[in-house]
Amino acid sequence: MSIVGVSPIPDSRRSALGALSALSVVLIWATWLVSTRHSVGAGLGPVDLSLLRYGIPALVLAPVWWRTGLFPKGATGALALMVLGSGAPFFQIVAFGLRHTPASAAGVLLPGLMPLAVALIGMLFLGEKPDRWRKLGMLAILAGGGVLLFGNLGGDGLGWISFVILPIGATLWAVYTHAFRRSGLNAFEGAALICVWSTIFNLAALPFVGTQFLSAPAGEIALQAVTQGLLSGLVATLLYGTAVRTLGGTQAAAYTAITPVAAAIGGTLFLSEPLGTATIVAALVTGLGVLLSTGLLSRR
Image (cartoon, rainbow, N blue to C red; front, top):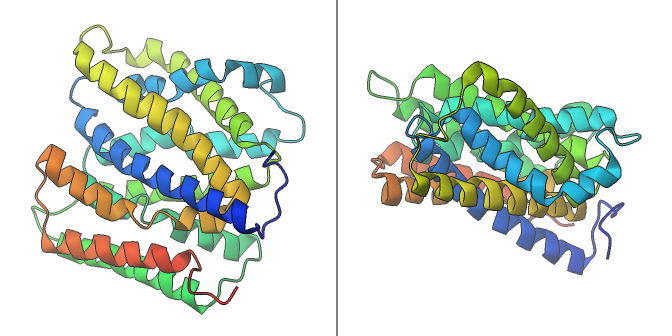
């Protein structure tokens, strides 16, 4: 069954499909945060990671973007916003932020803030009117960010890069979410075009920034090929596109409730990052806010 043109108010089966897709995405995102934090500055460069992140899906989905063409009719403007919001520019901004931010805090400042950014864009520019529960969720997300900010003040806390760059990344992803919803493209077409354009940009940048593929350990390249290229680049992008088509942009983004907590746990287990009280509280409050933002407690 095609998911193109699905009504913003999905039936029960489409809603279940969208929820399952969105929850799968956030688990992959938590893995991606930990993996990217592990590799940035330690073997592979940001452009190398970006090539894996978008190049592998671009090859797999080549029949799709070859059929649609690089400039699909009626979707060029939306596609430009989609590439900006979730393609190579988004990746480089986030990679720079992650270089200075533990995965636990990044879970609050990036995927934790995504649904807030999506909701605010919807309210300010698209005429969306969230109910009181979703507004309460937005306030909780802001509160989680505030807890993280005040808990990390001082010489040993997070720097301005974490609190500026990663929220910019969250805003870019929100732009992508709304642009894709209105592009008329299905999940495969959107993923294919974002990945092929990002690969073009990455290849164009290589002569200026160089590559570390020849010197990086083979195990590191294999790990990133799986987490960046297959899971985050291909599977998560397709699943998120499905969630946006079936649930709508705002509600799909809101299913990131588990990401801040999962990223915090992953950073502690796999990167030996300290898990302070402020980070734990911020992750839980943000996760609760995101959960409320899904509208699960709403009347409709």
